[in-house]
Length: 190
Ligand SMILES: Cc1cc2nc3c(=O)[nH]c(=O)nc-3n(C[C@H](O)[C@H](O)[C@H](O)COP(=O)(O)O)c2cc1C
Image (cartoon, rainbow, N blue to C red; front, top):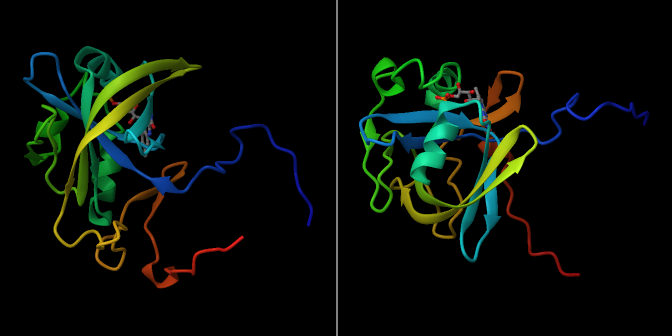
């Protein structure tokens, strides 16, 4: 097999990955803003930490610094176009809730609402902020998880036969999972 040497960034080897939508209140709690984030993921289980890497150029960045908390919504495949649209405009210029007729749900701990159509949502409080090159990593503690009935199996795994998550492949390409490929393997013994 031949390999070709490429510059970092020429191949999106870290995709596909699940897309989440970060929701943040403005400082006055008058308007919530929502932004799709591909560069987000779990960081620790005890305490439960989740990181989102956000560009300082975004309105969401400004709001996250101001409020220190956010919601994470994971939307089903039928909302893929909405997810893309939320990333095509800035909350500085448009009210995304009104423009895209977003239906919101209240969280229990964090003031920022989440998207009512989410199959799961998490409430997060920022614990650390790190400037990393052209991004900021917001490390946050997950303080609540709101799960839609039937979305998760008793062992905590997503029921992919019931829920089709939105994954991102880079370059405006999106996909969902193929539930037919699901296998449960015996625990590996070393
Ligand atoms: C699929 C997708 C994934 C994105 N992932 C990120 C991300 O991880 N971090 C980031 O800073 N911007 C990301 N963006 C870009 C922001 O969503 C975009 O700049 C948005 O317009 C910012 O909105 P705001 O100014 O209302 O915060 C992504 C956009 C799309 C379409």
